Length: 277
Image (cartoon, rainbow, N blue to C red; front, side, top):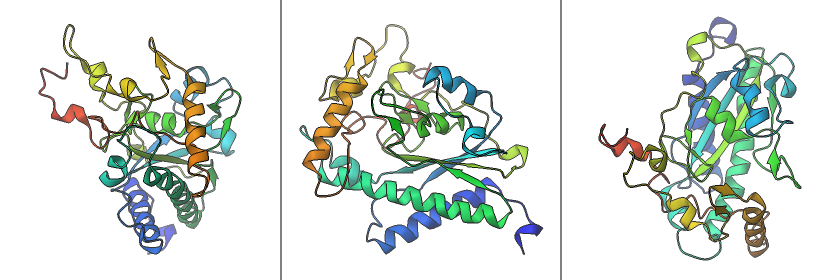
């Protein structure tokens, strides 16, 4: 059956991403780096995209800015295997395994985007891609296309106290996204920003026990009185990039993501209904 005889859906998108992850991992000896990917599709006309100009930056791009004639935005998450996450739990600098996985996963995301672009082209659609990382203003340290916020709009997760998105596979991994002119069937679009709350700290009942472990794990002291000091955070990441420069460029830390109830799973799924209020 040719592309002209069928329509594209989320199931096929997930299948293609999963295939790319498997082939890339096997071809590079990295088969044990990643778990099953997640994906969702948002309408390019979702009003939440406009809200990112307030929530992230006035210069944050809209889908139409990335690709004229944008109809849809595909968001995906590549979760790390447990061994990658566990390698980074010890105090001190980011582990070499964590730093290398960051570099490898960015390359994987580029391959996923290229494969999705090829798939979409077979359906007569154009694509607009944004790099997986280093697409930010180096003075403000704010991205003009936040893959995490795009994933939030696509309902892949909710934000934790560490500003990371908690998916049903946790928060340890990498996000990517792709803008396309392909108009999916309405039922394929996620209800924007409708993912359930997953952060245990935000789910605490009045007077109940909270979490906040991510803030306490930060070696840079970037979380202070409810505020996030992105410059202090990035200074720590640059220290790690210098330490691991033999691997490539890995301005990472990740200590506020690992060793948490939400690192590799949805912690709210293990709460009783009464405790999840």
